Image 1 (cartoon, rainbow, N blue to C red):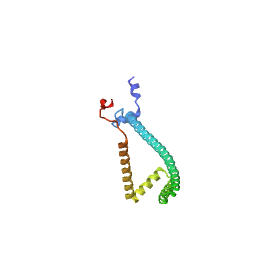
Image 2: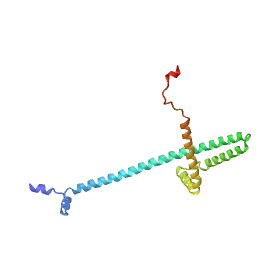
Image 3: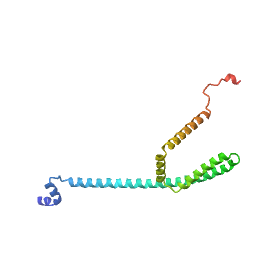
Image 4: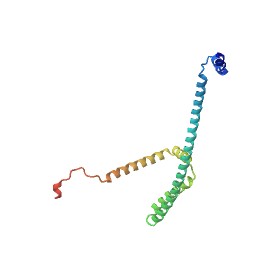
Length: 170
């Protein structure tokens, strides 16, 4: 009878025991391998999801930028019409407005089919070529924003915090 129990010993477990490994280490290494595989699969899944989301956002931004640049073309047309109306009163101002409209139109044509990455690269290249101009435009934009905020705060009427004198109303 003792023979039946000892005869059922797995040869692989006998080999591990003979090399100094405990009996449960095979299960532990299997669990460890399974956990490592699950971690690898999870990382791959997260990377695939991130790539999909990034691609979707890029496509969405590309479409939106395309529409915005198309709107710049319409804006250039409106500015050209304004220049035509200015021509009778002030030919010099009309000429300046017309040149501005031409630049907007060229911008719309040049960048109409550009992607977000291409526009970012173009902006970066322009900043490297003309840092003083970019700095000046940024400073001007900041000044105009601060000025607009300041004007908005001073023109907004606020209620009086002084108590009203009831005697003067009668």
